[in-house]
Length: 474
Image (cartoon, rainbow, N blue to C red; front, side, top):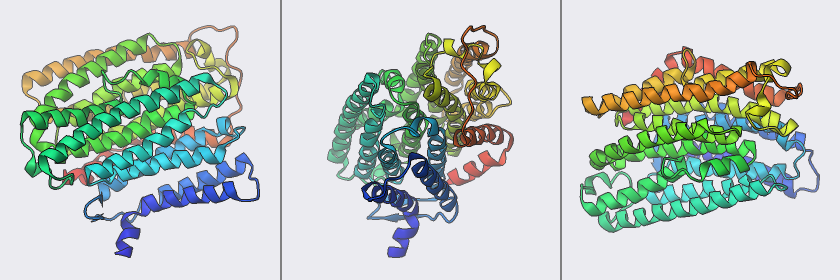
């Protein structure tokens, strides 16, 4: 039993160990320099990624409260890699911060909660993991301690999270009242398309939609992204959303598969609204963090198309796209993080003529935006292609043709606002451009990893094939 515990929960145990190391450093008599803490944490996060990539097993613990398999292990590895990249890119912001240890303890606590959430085999365990990941995240959203916007972001995040948690708990209580169980493996045989069960599912689904910023549950996103530190915004946009999407796909494909006809129609409507509204509002933004907030909302709309496939291709396309999205979005946020920390500039107008002073940062941001837009041959193009392809799984011919037309038209709209930033960087004049930045080693490594990821995930087909193979259990 102990061996099973150590093997099946090794990813959670490594993160817990890192948290305790940071706690011992904080309460110790010796005061560590910020650079030393960051180097130690980055080394431990790298060890976490490498150590947990191999030897993942399949099994359940605690009466099916906790489960894991090869695909779940890969999903956790993707989140671990994204967290490492964010940590590398946060160097310029954290090096002069007073509470570096506390930041990492809170950040890794949220990651631990996400791991538990992904491995949950029970609705109660899922909820506990969700809360463990959400509460510390609200705290670090307020980590720009001298900025009122940061406090406002944390307040809005905790209020919206509380509301979504209320919906989730209401839905969970109804499911338990109807079926008498919260265990994922037992629920499918007890569900049917009845009004009360549909209502319970809608409440649960609304809670998920809040977490991933699906329209009309997206209103908190832009304000929180703008007010939070760039590192926290990066984490919210890719790691937090990625974890919830992993769970959403698993829950829809297994637990609520008897209600597939219901949630397919919901996905159709919500994905269309999310893509259109996310794109239209992104056009109007000048602040780059708000710009990427609405961009991320539109990206979630495309992910919902892939989720609707309800097939092996559906789960594979979602995991593959989230991997691409982590590289692409973190490349963009990495550039914004460095420039914001060193110059305080965060608007599109500030980035005019950026290429003249910082060509490397300009190209990294441009390639990232091309990938987010889905411009071939970047990885984002293949990611969206597989999402649309997976969406054909359950779609009727006429309905899916309409869906494809809407998605294609919105791809054109997204080209416009992504290229608006590229135009500002390379073509617009600026009397006071961003000064030349000497990029520290850690952020540079983070950006290079993102660039390599954007190229590799697009060019090497075995990555998608590997994910597709692991998805065979769904």
